[in-house]
Length: 444
Image 1: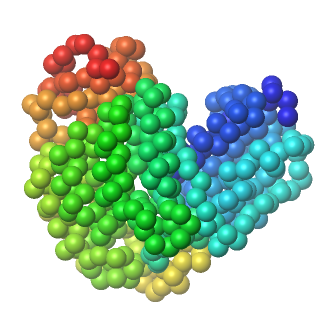
Image 2: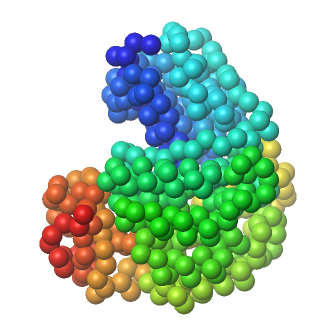
C-alpha cells in the first residue's frame, strides 16, 4: 500500500470505542499510513459506530456525508457495534465501501488492498458467538488522559441492551498485558489512565479463554496501584453489584486511584429494575453510595439513568426522581429509552410516548445540573490537584480535579498535561470553578 495514503477516524459512543479506535489507528500508521483529522482530506475514513441509542445510529449518515464532502472518492469503512448489529443496513448507506464486524475490525488493513469505490458496501461480519477472543487496546495522543481497555463483552441479559449482541461474551485481558499497557502509557508522559470495558467489574472472566475468573477486579486495582509513573487511575463505570467494599476501601487509601465513581442505576424503581433484569435492587445502590461517602466524603459519584422504559408510569418515574433527589450523588447521565430490535424490551407493553420521554429526560437533566452545582459548592475552599486539558476554550484552559470538578483558568499553554495543586475559589456563570494556584511550579 502506498505510504502516502491518508486515513482519518471518527468515533461515536463510549470510552471503549475511543480506546479501540486509537489502537486501530496505530495499526494503520504501522502500515505506513498518515493519520489526519476527520475534517481534512483523506483517502480512507473509518467510522467507529455505536448502537446504545437510536440517536447514535442516525448520526452515522451525516458523518458519512461530511467525509464525502472532504473527498467524494474516499474509501469509507464502518466498524463498531452498529456495524456488527446491522451490517447490511450500513453497507446500503450511499458512499460506504466496507463494513467490518466485531472481530474483523482489528484486522482492517487486511481488507483494503483495493481502495476503489464500491456500488454497494462489502460486508465482513462474524457471528457474534465467534467474538470469543480478546484484543487489547488503549488510546494515546487523542486526549490528555488515556483510555485503557481491560475487558470486553457482557454476560448480563438486561432487557433493553444490545451490547451482548454487538460485542459477545464477557472476556478479559490478561493481568500481565494490562500492566504492560499501563506502563507503556505512563512512559509516554500521560498523567491519567481511565480503565474501560463493557462490564469492567467482571474483570478476570475469560482471561485465558475460559469462563472462570483467573483474577478479580479488586486484584486488578491492587496491581495497577503498584505501577510506577502513573499519577492518576480512574474507573470509568462499574456495576453496583460488582463494586465491592474491599475495592472501595482500597481506593480510599490509594495514592493513584482517584475518588470518582460512575455507577449505572438505570431506575430508582425496584419494579422497573426487575423488568430491566438488572442484578440489584435500589437498596444495594443506596448502600454503595453510602459506603463511598463514608470513607471518601469528597468523592464524586456519577449515575446512569434511563427514562421512558416500557411500563414507566408517572408514579414510577417520580419514584426514580425522588430517589435520586435524596441520594448523595454528583451528576447524572440521562438516557432516553429507545427501542432496540432483538431485545426483550422491544415487545414489552406499556410504551411511553416520545413527548413524555422527552419531558422526563428534561426533568432529570435539570436535577443533574442542581446536583452538580451542589457538589461543586461543597468543594469550594478545598485544595485539590488539577490535571489541565489541551484545548484553548475562548481564552481559558479547563482541567479536572481528582474528584472530577471541572475548573477553568486563563489560557497558558505551559499548563497543558500538567498537574497543579490549586484552591477552588468560586463557581462562575458557566458553572465551572475558578481557582488559585497554591504552588506555581509544574508537577512532573
